[in-house]
Image 1 (cartoon, rainbow, N blue to C red):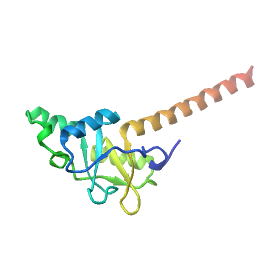
Image 2 (cartoon, rainbow, N blue to C red):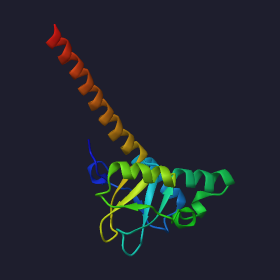
Image 3 (cartoon, helix red, strand yellow):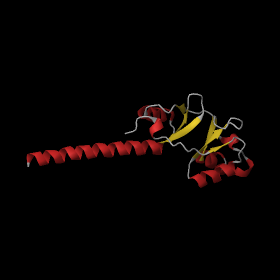
Length: 150
């Protein structure tokens, strides 16, 4: 079972710059089948400065009757980022996500460059695989015992 973020975080991250039109951000989310875009510094396009989610678009603009074509990602993005290193333990990442009530953690290298993103879905897939492996081991042990006692 993977134990570090680098073992399961998604390395291909959809990104935008703060001046990207909110409507374009929504279209990019649809195109890439993602619920969030990491917002990167316009000059240094590998440094995360924010995140914009599908909820930001819906609750911050559309539910208020605002036109997403008139706003930029910078207008609605969250800037209170929770960053993690690739070596972070998976269970520590789970604890951090629970504590901060996050669906995603942005993964950066030692100098703050974007290297990936770990989502709740990624964590659930890792944990589910771990539980599946554990249950297979338990069933195998039971079967071995049956064979030995037969």
